[in-house]
Each structure stands twice: as structure tokens, then as C-alpha cells.
Image (tube, rainbow, N blue to C red; front, side, top):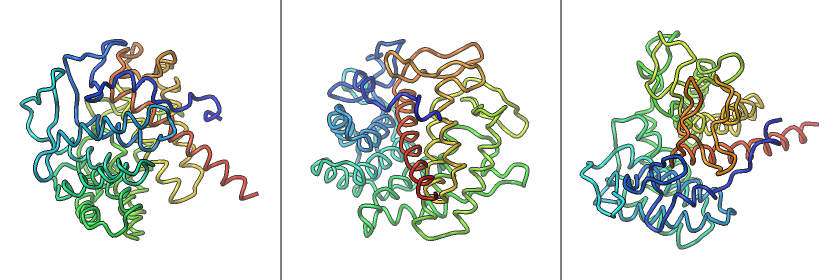
Length: 347
């Protein structure tokens, strides 16, 4: 089983990318590109991951830095600034729906998972301030919905989170043009498994079994669509429509992370071990079971490479890719343990 040979999830390399202000977005080989600064998207992801991996020796510092960045990035109401330069000045980028969605995802996850009382309270206060967020962008809605679902698991009566989930249930209507292309968009694009995961998560909390079944159908279709010769061949950064055929490149680590998270959610809901096996396959993509047969992580640093290309890997190890690698290994560890317990109890 891959779970016994995969690297354990560790925040060591992520900590090297993070100073007192935030996590650097870009890395040139092993060196953070300080001139490119920080991104709110990565702060949201980092807060979520550090909160869930709280036993890691770097987790508290990283969670505190990430939350502090989100507090400074927050605008009045639901908006968040997108980027800060290395010298501490906010860039001219306007407020970003996607960044706000990821911020809410991190905040909600921190409320549910972080063991540090002060940090949980700060995260809850900021989530409540920003919970009026609404968007027409599906992925922004999906990230916000996942944050709301996590928060409701700890604070069932939270009005802002519940309103976000109701809005998401209306927006994440995952119906496609026809049976041959059941996806709700004309093209697959970015973090694709995020959409059925968010729809499934909201359906579970709201007790909507038909919607949950629809989300599982969408996820099953995506798994089949992105499987080639028994391994994952993910939709590349350029996207792909019904006419596209794998393999295609540049494949991004965020796709493996999104797939692992979505299938872990499906496994927790259905207890069907086939979903656990798909999580293992998503993790195996990082370890070399992919279209090129090379590892998409650096075993020395513990960072994730920035993409899988036809000739190998992009050897830069930026924040998104490295968080994706650690997050996928964490999901693998959790699901492997759950699957083992499930198998033992059925004997």
C-alpha cells in the first residue's frame, strides 16, 4: 500500500518559505523570490493546513502568521486584498473573489481544527466579518462553502456560515450540457475536484441526499476522465474541453490535492473503500505514478515541484505546489488510517 511508503506530512519546508509577514508565493529552485511577495490565497491555504496539522512543531507559528496576514489583508465587509509586495506594500490588484473564498476556507477550517483558543477566536471573528461574501465565480463560492462547512461542524448555529452554505447550494448546481459532458462548465480548468467536493459537503450538512448523489456522480465522472492507464493524468493549467485527450501538460499539484480532498470527503460519506483507493492514486501522482514516471516533489526539501511537464518537472517549489504536496500526504495518512479501521471492523 502506498500509505506505508509515502513521506509523512511535514510543514518543515513550508516554514522555510514563511517569514514573520507571510508565506512567499514564488520560489526559484530552492530560494524564495522575496521580490514577488505574498498572496492571500496562499495565506488561506496555509492557515487551513497548519490548523489541521497542529501537531507539527511549526504549525502554531505558521497558523499565526497566516491568520495575521488575512487580518491585515481584510477590507471592510467581505473583501480581501490579493497581494502584498516583499517590502510590505499592498499591490494595485483589486479585491479578489477567489482570494476571499480561500480566506474563508482557511478561517473556517481554523475554527474547526485549531487547538489554540486565541487563534480560533480571532479566526471566528474575521470569518463573521467577511461572511457576507457572495460571488458568481464557482471556485470562490466552493472554497467559501468548504470553510462554512468546517465552521458549522464546530459552531452549528453560526448564521454567517449557514447563509454561505445556502448560497452555495444554489450556485453549485452541478449539471452539465449532456450525458457525455456532465460538467457544469464548458471546460475543465483549475482545482476541478473542488466543485463536486463543495457540493457534496454542503449537501451532507443540509441533508440533501439527491444533491449528494449528484455530486458523487460528478466526482466519479472526473476521476474517470482524468485516469489514463491506471494513473491520474490531470487536466493541465491550460484546461481542457470535451475534445481534449490526455496526456496533456503542464499538470499542476493543486489538481492532485483537490482530488485527494474530494475523494476523502466521498469516502467519509459513503464508507466505500474505492474512494480511499482514489485518494491513494492522487498521492501516487506525486510519487511518480503519473504520465512521465517522475516524482513531483523534492525528497530533500519536502517541497512540491511546480508542475509536471512532458520532459519532467518544473523544479521550482512554490507555495501552492508545496502546500498541495503536504496537504495530499496529510489526506493520504488520514484516509489510510480510516480505511484500515474500516477493514478491521468489518472482519
